[in-house]
Image (tube, rainbow, N blue to C red; front, side, top):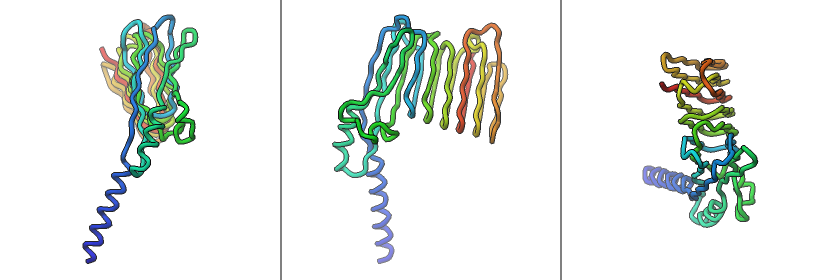
Length: 223
């Protein structure tokens, strides 16, 4: 009897966990002409951000919103909220800002908080400056860019970019790990207050400054 009760409790707990892990999603995509844009700012407070090189004449954004729900009765409501959450590209002068967009069904605190998980992919022309203002999550940049700045409070940063393009590299973490493959040698720092890692190339064009207060920074300079 005791065994059957324990098994029933375990099955119930597993069912509750599975229900809590249910998600609704909403995909989105948009683009704008490159025009005179010289800098792209990612104003997504939390989530997963991937930046790659794309067409020379276009800034393109795609992604997905995820919202968890607990119990099938919540599914329809959460889907309605998710369907009204997306991201957009706002252009002002020579700057393009990638920012969240909330429709009339997504005005609650829950909709605007971390409960709406963002995963975005941004394609930018080579040479454009990229400023990532995300504070929590994962940032992955792979390509040739202008100046790059990223300062997380918690999370991981991965950067892969041509060595010849970088003029000044600064990679740091307050608590965690810093790994840099500089092409001809690698450097690693980890622990509490491991400091910053710097590298200078007088023939380069762009500054690369990446930092996270808590987490990991990985930089690879390719030949």
